Structure formats: structure tokens, C-alpha cells
Length: 127
Image (cartoon, rainbow, N blue to C red; front, side, top):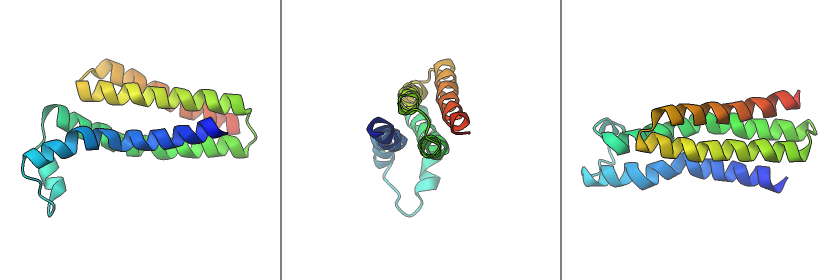
């Protein structure tokens, strides 16, 4: 079970990676407003704005993925199946974040679909 748990950790890191690499530096450049950071985020554009969207989407997909891994484990799904689909999810999130930040929208959509498909397979396998 080590690889799926590692994938949960990597997926969590991928939630915050675009924020730390692109959003925070852009906000600092604008003169970081710690009192109203969400208002300041509305002023972002280009790559920083897309990175913020990737960051926010990471929250939307992380919980279902973590739940799917745990569900599959508790249901005694074959560990190699859990590992395979966990890796598919993480790989799709790497592609998703990169595609979103760089503005490759069709690739982003395909990566999102692949990742959520992996979550679906894990959840259905647990049934």
C-alpha cells in the first residue's frame, strides 16, 4: 500500500505547487496584501491567474481521490489495481497542472477527465 499512500501525498503537494510557484510570487510583485489576499487574487492575469485556477481545482479533486484510495483499500481491492489507478491519477494531475498553467486547454481537459476516471475506477472497484 505504500505507493497509493505516496500518491495521496504527491497529489496534496500538487494542490499547492502552482500557488507557491506562480501565484504567491505574482502577488508579492503586486505588493502582497495580507489583509485582503482574495481581493488581490482577482487582479492576477495570465499564467498566475491560470495557476490560481489549477490550485483551486486541486482542492476539488484531492478529496475524492484520497477517499477513493481509502475506499478501495478498505474493500480489499487488489493492491496492484489500487497502485495502478493511483499512479494514473497523479500522472494526470501533473499533466493537468502544467497544461493549465501553460494555457493548453484541450490537454488540460483530457488530463482532468483521465484523473477523475481513475477516481471513478477506484470507487467502483470498492463496490
